[in-house]
Image 1 (cartoon, helix red, strand yellow):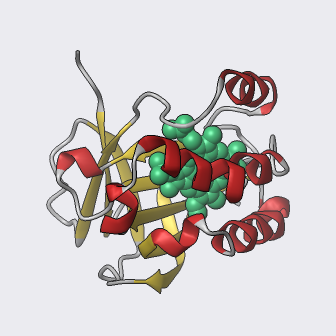
Image 2 (cartoon, protein in one colour):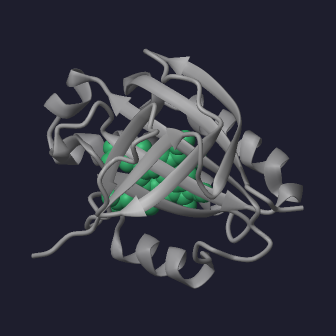
Length: 184
Ligand code: HEM
């Protein structure tokens, strides 16, 4: 099966300007002024760092959750969504050692990841990229797009998720905030 691999590169050009980078835990990445996102591409020559991920099947969402999400969520690329966040995340060996049912229980029954996230739809559009199976330095590349007036709500969402039990299994996380380059 052909799977498109997306490459996120920090460098001297790209559609997104990097406006702020916060290292929550673990090692950071080199400071770069722009982010480019390309499908199936080689790393640009000017890349200071480059991260790859692919869209995969769901692991935890139930039928009911998937149906609810599809009813409310909006897609990427909305004209008003001129701000974005790329948040690469790595989870600990202890997380990956857990069986699937225990990971699901921590993710949703204890941490309410989806239920919390639903509070911020449709303002926040999201896409999850998987990296772990590519042998990358992060397990996930998470991507979010929103209109500038929803930036504060996005920060609140992050605070709620980072306070959950799920996040005790996160050992590397970098919050990279972006604005459409050339946008008003
Ligand atoms: C905007 C609201 C959000 C919603 C509705 C949402 C929903 C979901 C759902 C349903 C999944 C499970 C996908 C599956 O079944 O495989 C998921 C996974 C994930 N989400 Fe979110 N999410 C939101 C925000 C966030 C934020 C802000 C972050 C990061 C800071 C994040 C990080 C992740 C990660 C890392 C995973 C993969 C977890 C794993 O497989 O261990 N999510 N999200």
